[in-house]
Length: 236
Image (cartoon, rainbow, N blue to C red):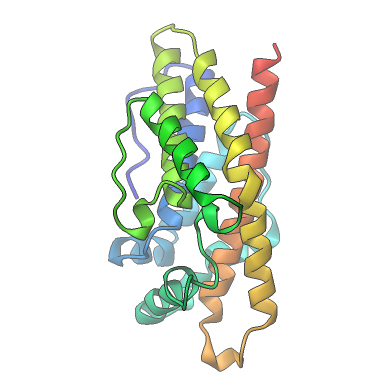
């Protein structure tokens, strides 16, 4: 996770826009493969602290739910190896596709059309795309969150330079409504259905389940609230 320190922000509008942008980046990090750095940040509480600083500075009230508070802390009690194994089992492995794919095209019809539209979005804003690993697929949740981080960063840059921010706000709204907000709740529902069918508790790492359920829930709420906030700005 990157440090949450950027160029000095001069006013409240820049601070809140910067927090929105960093939220998208941190969310993307939460759903990547949990490498050593991420595990250390999650276990030490650094991840929770970063999220709390950001949510405290959003331009709308964001109250943490009790399940989110306990869930984001859950990895502190999980062995490193089990975090990695459970992540692979849930999100990357499995016959045909993993139990909980973080890929939009596996929740909707016509994945190729979704690919084409996503690549058009990315290319329109000057981002080249070449398909690589699963995480690099254009419909992967991490990729979509990084794109929203990019759009909100461009919005912040326009704000700092007294340029029109509305093209970026419109793009953010359009992207949210056409992509992550269409399928993120389906992903969360899929996760909860799997949770109800868990084998014996000793056969799984429950701390990992608690963490990712909370992360998905927090993400769903943030995306919904941010879309509503963007709508209010565009309606002015």
